[in-house]
Image 1: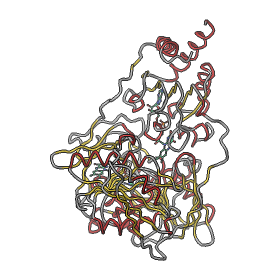
Image 2: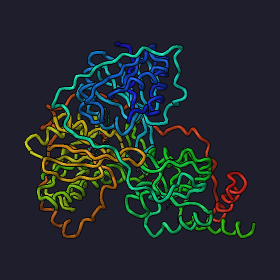
Image 3: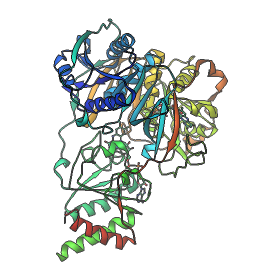
Image 4: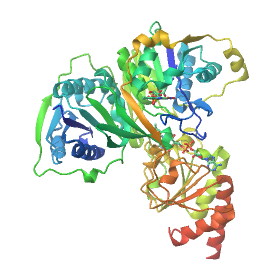
Length: 331
Length: 256
Ligand SMILES: Cc1cc2nc3c(=O)[nH]c(=O)nc-3n(C[C@@H](O)[C@H](O)[C@H](O)COP(=O)(O)OP(=O)(O)OC[C@H]3O[C@@H](n4cnc5c(N)ncnc54)[C@H](O)[C@@H]3O)c2cc1C
Ligand SMILES: Cc1cc2nc3c(=O)[nH]c(=O)nc-3n(C[C@H](O)[C@H](O)[C@H](O)COP(=O)(O)OP(=O)(O)OC[C@H]3O[C@@H](n4cnc5c(N)ncnc54)[C@H](O)[C@@H]3O)c2cc1C
């Protein structure tokens, strides 16, 4: 399969991670431009059903890489199984979603094959004969075109949201599913994972909030959070924050928005002193309206905001709070 | 426990960045700081040492300016430092960067290596995992807690959407540390003074060159991303902006 793109789909606890469909959509788009075929693989234990689900998409073939040793995710078994599989099938391009699990094993896999991984790509294009991948750099302030300077197989992970999962084309008939029994020798697996768990129940559920005022590191000091709270109160909304604010203990963890916090979709998300890193954006881009206040006109948050104010939050937030109060008193 | 901490120097978060002439990186005349998760990695190493005794060594690769991050590490309590000092190091891809680190520490015996989970500038999120594989060590990523056990360590990995997982692993091992794992300390004046007398070993490009290969990937160009969404910018004095915003809140967003 020298001219094959291999998508490694992700399953967790027996469920297909939907972000895998985005990766399939990416592979189909690349295949359309390069005249390659697309195959997919899922790994785990007892995953025939998931392989069937994946096979509903327009793919040349789907592999179910099975081993009882793959029942619980840990990187060594996965790398052993995928390394052998890739060495045998020789795909030219291996695509994966940039999930926490992939971040954990994919650099090990690429290194074990003495190859490289272009991580967290957001798109691709053809430049002459060459496939070039786009990725964000400097926390989204710049983008870079990156290419491979080594022989295949080439490894790429795509950031969630870069392609639309619902655009992954379905096949006219289901793709053939082939079971591959992975040989994972004893002693290969070194880590012993326990079951995933959630921390104690969250005290606030921001997913139901209609108005969220969210503060970032631009707030500078813990005591200044009061400014944002006053605005949230005036608007009748909830206060939330970016990760560094919660890391510092200025607001409790359950008010964190983003990939490692809550995902919200309020009517209004007002981002105050937040730069708009991708891990934050994924948690709030579903908001109906976004207002951003930031002193840096180049801040990536303005890329997704409906309304933007470039300026000092310490001037603007108190003025806005007063104006909201006035308007509410008057109406 | 003997712990190595990889600390990278990155442009300061608020620094205005400009493209260099060849359009492959930023201009170097900006202010720099310690990559955020690396500061947490150092703090965690110091806490582990305080609990279990041992040694904390900090390492960086980069030009002369990057010695600053080692000075900061030493001032906070690291015992010694290793500087892979050459302008060429920053031009390496993560695969070769990891090879350079492995070559530079080949005569050392660490129980643990900590890296940040990713850099704030390039953000490859790979250097640590690659190092582990090159050395034949187990690794775990995005770590939020480390406990020593009889036979090794038990760590808490952060997963997506508020999920976590404990993992038992043997030593030696490599961990990539997530910001927020602990609360950072400040360097004391005494610490800053003592740092001046702590050992700092320099490693030249020549010493590790034989371990390196060609870069496996290439940055074709760097550019300011095209805006895809039209943000309506509101300007004026704070009072004027506030009035405009309230008008939007009332009549367009309709939340008032
Ligand atoms: C072709 C190419 C050209 C490049 N050119 C330049 C350039 O001109 N200038 C430039 O500054 N960068 C350049 N880079 C970036 C490059 O040096 C990366 O920093 C390197 O590949 C490591 O990746 P990363 O920083 O994204 O690390 P990640 O894998 O995201 O970092 C994870 C962790 O590894 C550790 N780590 C990584 N690098 C270092 C380091 N240098 N010192 C100490 N700890 C470290 C840290 O603990 C960090 O938290 C280039 C990269 C490529 C691929
Ligand atoms: C695996 C992983 C998971 C993560 N999960 C999350 C997550 O769930 N949620 C999350 O938020 N982050 C998460 N992060 C961190 C994320 O990458 C960013 O580091 C973080 O979102 C940045 O927070 P910030 O915007 O508040 O800070 P910064 O990026 O430091 O931005 C501060 C902003 O404030 C502006 N500012 C400063 N002063 C003023 C002023 N006076 N007036 C107006 N504006 C001002 C600045 O211009 C800047 O844009 C995660 C990272 C990783 C690697």
